[in-house]
Amino acid sequence: MSEEVTVRGVESADAAALVELLNKLQSETETITIDEQIPMLSVQEESDQLELINQSPLDQVIVADFDGSLIGVVSL
Image 1: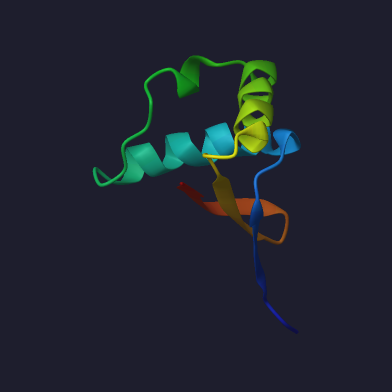
Image 2: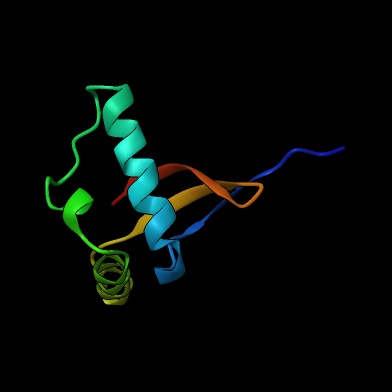
């Protein structure tokens, strides 16, 4: 049995899982800084924000996906 992590660009469909991951990371460590607005966004608002980010030539959000669950994120 192979365990594989997929690293990929974020999709608007990841909005709910991404907010959940960011909230979890923020509660587990002080080494991550998260915009205070993110936990207040609805899933639709987060999805819309991800669409805007994906259209930007200057911004990129990359997620690590393990077995359908987001386990990591980086924003460039």
